[in-house]
Length: 95
Image (cartoon, rainbow, N blue to C red; front, side):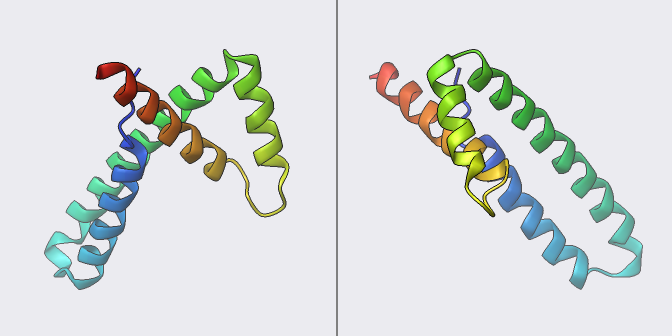
């Protein structure tokens, strides 16, 4: 499984799109809203895949629970950590 920082890239795309939306003419505002909605759905889909992958390995689940228990961290940071880790593992195995 290779996530290649997919959701992080999508989040950056969403930030850029949101910035463009603020500067856009009223004609393009609806287009930017549609693009943002698609990006949000893709991020949600990747988060579900990451959550599933983490839940299938006991050690990963425990680490996720520890990270998630830190006040102010929430679900996003542990998922980004696992996304980075899984990308690194995929890279190491590809060599």
